[in-house]
Amino acid sequence: MIQCKDCELCEVEADGKKTFKCDPFSNIKEPECIAKWQLIRLDMLVASYQSMLKWYGKLAPIQDKLFKYMEREIEDIDESDRWKIDDDEDEDEEGP
Image: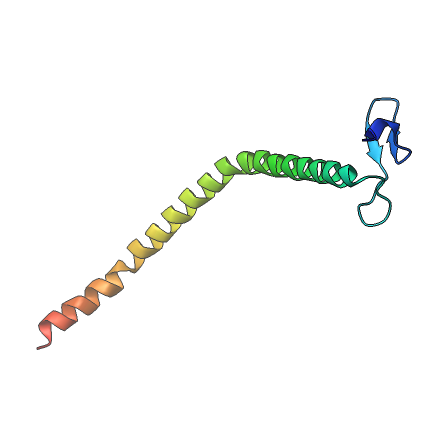
């Protein structure tokens, strides 16, 4: 099995970062390369998911504040409209 560092489709930069030029649909050298490519993509997917979770973690306190604020606003609106409901109930009780 050929190692990625020995393959001409892998470039190693001065800082040690590896850039893969392989494409599983056109220029794979060995069947093992597809499994490696899948692992690399899966690792990228996990990394992006973790960064998304960090971002959501930063937004969570703001969302909590917004939900509390909206809940208070809705309760205030309900309280201010309660007189409409109370009058309707009083009329229904007196009617029959």
